[in-house]
Image 1: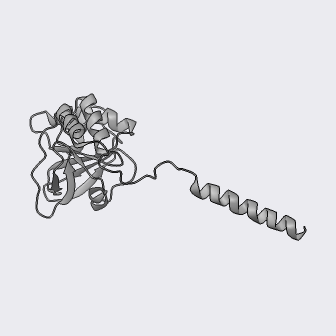
Image 2: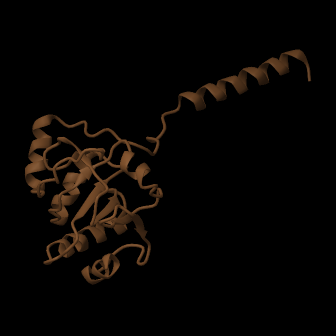
Length: 187
């Protein structure tokens, strides 16, 4: 290979590397912005979702955003409580959320807090409105709560917080298909 050919190969390799480096990519997984929509659109989405109020913040809790009104609050791991991590792109989550909402309406039900992760806040509000789920829901954009309970990246992920603060993941069933399954899991 002569000198001219070597330089041609080097220039081609550098050109391809430059194109690859500058080529647009899909968004990386991880925390998403809360929303890129104007405030008035978010207010309309919040009104449309008709979510029940979030539990007032607790000292020592993990910082999350209440989807109902956009305020920051602290969610404490004090039970009994059922925490459900979900995302808008997760099909089993979409099936499970209405089941959790139905369970939560039953007398004596453990409070249920859906926690939106890996999705935009606006998309979560739209989905909850479409599904008719009115549970007091929060947004964990920085994954702080998920890190606190050491939740896996797979969704949905549901945790039962006992009265003594013990946190255990519910894995059987992998996701709820009936309110009776939720009742059995929290007993």
